[in-house]
Length: 418
Image 1 (tube, helix red, strand yellow):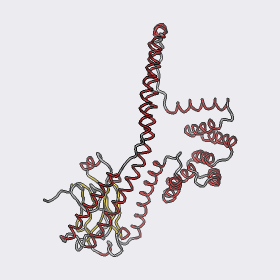
Image 2: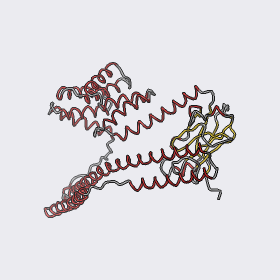
Image 3: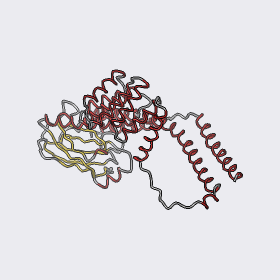
Image 4: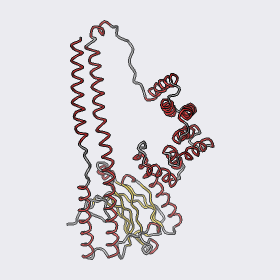
């Protein structure tokens, strides 16, 4: 058995040396993500689309006002794509670094566990043969049971080390996860007693008290919030809590303000990607509310139910999210939209209302005409205009005083007439 043990240990050392040597060598070569190729592609597409717009203008297919509008939208789309490329590159760089460390760790843990099991079986074979087999069956431990086991272990730690503030804080977090909010507050109080008053500790108490009072800002919750902000006005846990409460009470503008404080502060311990996603969702809901408010105040409005056919939905589900342009143009004269909205394909189906508040310019709006043509375009490239490969829905000669909700089902693929 000693020979087998020596072989197993030597094998473990050899494999770990190979894994970590490769990781250390690779880690020394700091590879920076170069997104210049994507930027060049976007610029090339920009020039191609710009040339198409200028060609349409020279051939008389669009007027000067439409040309300026399309060029403006094209420039904005280029800038937006470049900014998104930079942000994506930064995220991929950070993510790549973290994954580079995780993989060798996971491989090392697997090898150690596998080797231990292997030796336990082959190195102690006689012992296993002579040991009566258990008649019971092992049951998988669920997340709640694991949390309870963790709480039990942490309680033993704080009993043995009552001044261990880290253990008290982790205990408080685990108790919050189990819904034992009063005990969690007690644990956080112990941390404050040991380490002194800190904003994040009062923020943690505020969160526990918030859930204890059924997600309401009770007086005691407000007291903890005020104390945390007096110690640190940019405390992430407190501002995240305030943003979340504002969001669930439909105060989306306030939620964005609180969450933006956390994003701008840029602390490394905060998952800014998740908060940024929450901000995007809040902005989307705020835009819908603002549109509904504007529609209620407008004397002219068109209610639309925009959806996509099952066939096109299947095609869209296989790729990245795309931009949807919903707009109305006059049936005579130029093609300059009188009202327009820009959403994402993932938002569909969606009910929208086009009003004078949706106008591109004050000089061209719905109330200026009697009838319009309605379009819903899923852009294949993200640019304005209707191009080959786009998905389209349209309704023609619609009266602007139409009161019923009109259905726009995107079920047509735009193809060249050539």
